[in-house]
Every structure is written in C-alpha cells, then in structure tokens.
Image (cartoon, rainbow, N blue to C red; front, top):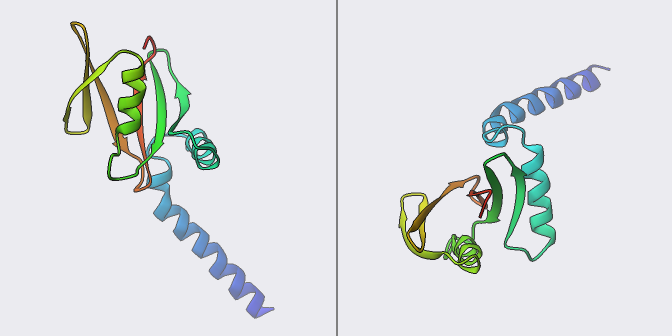
Length: 122
C-alpha cells in the first residue's frame, strides 16, 4: 500500500512539475488547442502552412521551421497574391505591391514551428 501511495505521489508531482515547466510554452498564444490541432494537421499533410485562427482583422498561420529557408512559405503565398518580397527587418518580412507596403510579422513558436499572420483582405 505504501509503494502504491508513494508511486502515485511521485506521478502527481511529476505531472505538476511538467505542467509548470511547459505551461509558458503551451499558453504563449493563449488557448493552445487551435495551435495543437493545426500542428497535427501540418504533420499529417505536405502543406507548407495551416491557418489556425481568424480574427476580424487577421488570419493567423503556422508553418514548420526548416531553418535554411524558414520564410520561403510566406514568400510563396504572398508572391502568388501579387506581392513582391523586398527585405527582412528583424522578424518582419517586407513586401510591396504597387505603392502598397505590407509587413508580415513572424514569431518563433518553438524550435520546430513559427507563426505568421496576414491582413484578412489579402
């Protein structure tokens, strides 16, 4: 009985420690459910990106971080919509279309994925 109680206590403490350690990573974007669902879809397909949420102003996407040409997916998506890539400024990618300029903010979600968003009207 003591071994069972000790094992149960160690298991519960391990889970609590893991949740405390992983919580900042999992909840950095709020509710992690849409992101985890998008990651599962991304891993099961050959798609370069998955939309994980949409607000009144933006559509938010997640892509794999392939390190060599991390932002190639974003560039391809916007070039297909008529935007031309100009330069990178920090974590922002600058695109131009005619007299319009668009800055796409990117954010590393983990070492394996990054997040980016586009205005809804694009």
